[in-house]
Length: 482
Image 1: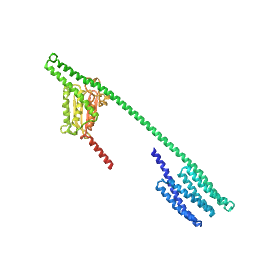
Image 2: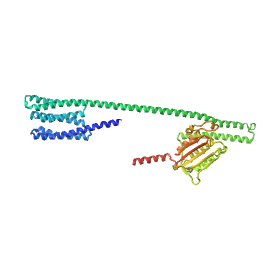
Image 3: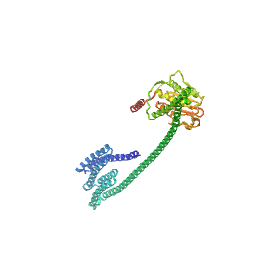
Image 4: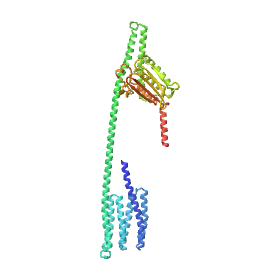
């Protein structure tokens, strides 16, 4: 807003500068014509000869000063022209009247006094221009008044006296008109400044209101996020207390039975072996819970040490299927693989992170697939040039209203269909973070009662922080060179 007003104010200023410069050029031409006229009329005195030559050189210099300084010295130039020009014009008028008794030449020079007054009002403040113009008019009035007083008894000069009186009256009318126009101009400038200030104030108020609304909305979103995070952590703590208490109770209970020795129910070697196995399974379950929590903490704190290397995606998928195979066999859920054996589907990524992603997805698929269900792992080329991994199951599915939140930390579906399933609610959150670190994309599609499809898209080459920075530098370099 301020820029537009500044441009608008510069346009009239440029017009004034050009107008005053043109007046100076015309004044110089008029001075040359005046010199020729006085010479032809044999009225050229020593003063006229010197002053006309000096003024014809002085005015172009002032015009050049104004133009080359782009108006910076406009007021100083007007002051100089006023002082020199006023004295010169009044002197020429006095010589024409008192030395040569030529009212026509006096009127010709008197017209240029009007031009000087207009320049004063166009470039200086109203009070200053009014004072200077009044002084100039007073000098003109004194010269013409003295001449009329001395020649009042000569009837031959009646016609010339009428021209001089009209010059005085016209000059006075011009002064009054210029004063009124200058007053109106100052009033318009004040109103324009006031309107500009009002617009700026309104803009500032609008910006303040927008900033306040944005800050309020941001605070509300932050509060909602904090409340959701607090609720999720409360749910997580409650779930973890249950998840940890169950294997701990089993470990303590089986350990107490073993402590009873032959006096207890573990007096049979087969029973002892069974209880020891149960203790080991409970410990492994606890270790898995703690490992998931530690992995999530590392990802949240952005402390994720990745080492990209060339590998075959089907080989990593096969290894992950073997890890989850024991759990799948217990539920009689077969794990099927589906990819074209003619291709290696080789990419450059972190093997441990990719294996963990697939293990988490397969574990979830087994966990939420009923006994006798089916899980299929597919690997294929992606349309964007990378590799696509899909894990399909025909399990219970995820309700649409909860599908958007399943990747949030500590989130669990927790309905009657998932009763009895164990978990921390961190599996899919860890998958999402790891896939993002690998430079890929992770999508979930699910239909209740039909199953779920988890899709992971990975680039052929993982973008590390250094490579990402170098690519950004290359982009910046190309933009600068362009």
